[in-house]
Amino acid sequence: MEWMRPVLVAAATVAVVALVGLASRWMRRRPTPAIGGGVRLPIVIALLGWLILVAGALMALVAFGLDEADDPVPMRIASVAMVLGGLGIVVLHRNWRLAVLDDRVYQRTALGRVRCVVYDDIVASSLRSHRGVPVLEVRGSDGDRVVVNPASFDVRPVLQAIAARGYRGHVGERWS
Image (cartoon, rainbow, N blue to C red):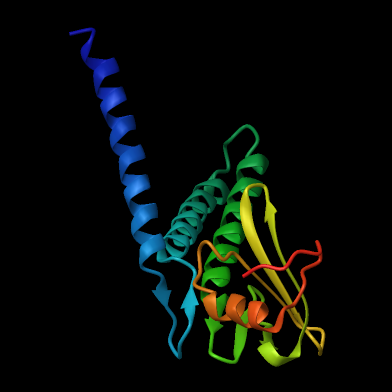
């Protein structure tokens, strides 16, 4: 029976890795639609934020309810940090949106600021890789800047507008 525990641990590890991989693949193929058009961050982001928020709130109840503990201050600080971190993730999920239209692209940031770049007003664009992740950056004539991962979101209209107008990126390349 000594061999049973390592086998169960290995099976649980394989099951968790498989579930995370399947969930990641499913979310990438089915982006979460936003009310009013566009897409938003995957729902797992909101679930993770709520999980951290609730765990931090429960930990805060315990930490601030302890009077006889040796040193409750670190637990109190950690619980407040978890509550604020979870709240930040939930707000991020609630606010962030991306809408790629035929003539413009809208992006609402994590803090709620709306950025809009009309394809006819593009003054600079770049497609680069940041730590192995592709990043598309488009700047409009009014100074608005939209930054998006083209591997995660469908930005074909933006790339087609850039290619049709023959814009050059910051690195001096023309892409199609």
